[in-house]
Image 1 (cartoon, rainbow, N blue to C red):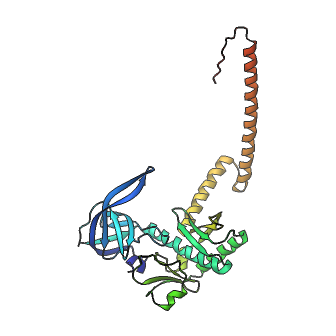
Image 2: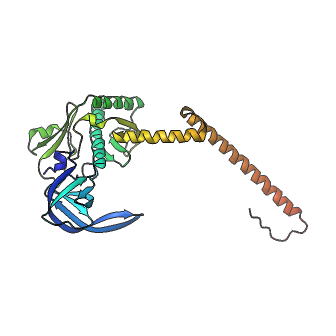
Image 3: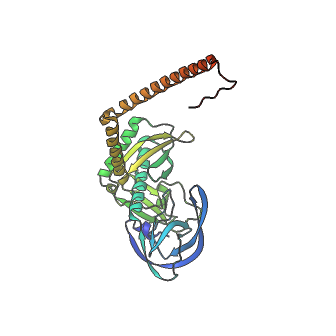
Amino acid sequence: MAFQCQRDSYMKELVTSVVSCCPAGLKQEVNGKKETLKGFNVKLRDTILFPEGGGQPDDHGLIGEVPVLRVTRQGSDALHFVASPVEVGQEVLVKVDWERRFDHMQQHSGQHLITALADVMFGYKTTSWDLGRQRSTIELDTNSIKPAQLQELEDVVNEKIRAHISVNVQLLSIDDPAVEKVRSRGLPDDHAGPIRIIDIEGVDANMCCGTHVSNLSHLQVIKLLGIEKGKKNKTNLIFLAGNRVLKYAEKSYSTERSLVSLLKTGPDEHVEAVEKLQKSVKLLQKTNLSLLRDVAILTAQNFKNDPQRGNFFSFHK
């Protein structure tokens, strides 16, 4: 079964009905301690709230006025965890947290684009990815990526975004020959229903359950921040897409202005200014240590030369 959120990822509200509402618990961590929140798992006739899967976190939103704290998939059903019960059989208005949803759409579609081009351009296969709260990471099956390759990849990725390429969703039966031609890391054991394909026209076709933009132009821009050493001779590629790039630029500019005020230099001289400060601090620490040694020697000599000294010496500062 494909949920409404998968058929139309841009839908923000949906009127549906409650199929069931059963007591349940949600495991969570509060202040470093694991706790279980008591509540209810709600099944709806259909939903616009995406259940976690395919490397994409779940949606947040409302069922009526009741906040949905977690959405998970159970076979062909989506379970919506809520803290208070919802009446079975009633019609409800479901609303999605659109800012969170669209962010996930941008990051996930961005990952598909980067993954496809990294493979085509350099033969680097994606082995996993993580959609983080602030940045996302793609694990590539290579032990290194050259700076020139990273820049070339970023340039081509953004060229595709500017080319206004359509992103289409196809639903195929599991025995359709076309399924064999798409990129995939396999289906979950409890998969049920048609196979969902995300097709970036002329770029990539990939099996995926997540929510995506309908056109690459909706990604706005992608910034490849850099790479980190991964596990088992792999490389983690860190990226931002869409609104995250704008927020990153805003935060970076704010930090830059603060440093200008603190260091009394322009942005281009910040690194040099900090290096000078570090050298000054090291010199001061060295001088301070030398002075402390001199004080210790003088204090010991004064004690030794004091005719009225006792058998014990105590010094506190």
